[in-house]
Image (cartoon, rainbow, N blue to C red):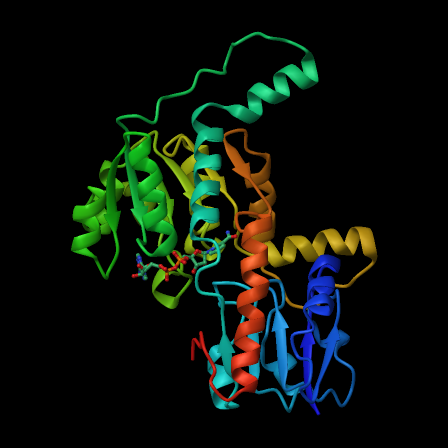
Length: 341
Ligand code: NAI
């Protein structure tokens, strides 16, 4: 009997699994849980061979030690920085991701955030809803047409962002250590150094994975290169931007605003909320300084923060589920796909 466990599964996902009966006729037992995978939710003597998790489950040494039989982690996400790959490699555990479920989804959300910033949609909405006033004071925005957009990381999501930006008649500058000249020609944008794109851009949007090389890619020095009055959007991963440096830049009026779907230590914020509402205890040592900084950011008037929601559409979630099941089926058949290690 081969044991597979899905963690943090919503009811509809569980229903899809049951209706699909994807592992019928195989000697497979499927366990499902709504819980994020944390050390305390693992039963002693768990013999799962495959686990499927979402980005809130931090798969570290502590977890892996409690799952001695595990051979495959199928993450229901593109990013896999929540999984300690080095520890997986030591233990011969393979990790499969969902490489491209949300290239349009996240690109569209990037523009939702950009338009919310450029046209002060939240302030406008709140004004009418909360005060009933139709006064326009403080609600003037700016056009996107003709503005320079810096795209940091031109992969699947970044290139869709560029496609949309072209529809808005924006000028696109891109930075990527692995440039694709044919794409630049086809979409009509130019690559340059990180320094040059930051210096010229009116709006900067980040679409790189979180890697050692992208940790705090935007920090005191690189943010200082940005044009005064520029805006920053981050839908990639929180730690690509150094929170303290961002707060300082916004507070000093260097950057004019930011829209962030991801935060450093965002997991700790969720834990903190659970602590207040569900009586859970913090199970890892969060960086309290960054958590405090996140609260400062949330309260800044020129900042929009959303709860890692860019991927969250019906269509994208269906693609995630079907690719994850395929990843597991292929692994069971001895022909694993979408491996990242
Ligand atoms: P991708 O792998 O297709 O593209 C990433 C691009 O970044 C590549 O072109 C790569 O050359 C480039 N890159 C690598 N190192 C870089 C560096 N140091 N500086 C600049 N560029 C660099 O990835 P995709 O599908 O476009 O996704 C990007 C990231 O978006 C994911 O890794 C994930 O962290 C994040 N994401 C966030 C979601 C959300 O809900 N907020 C949902 C899906 C993805």
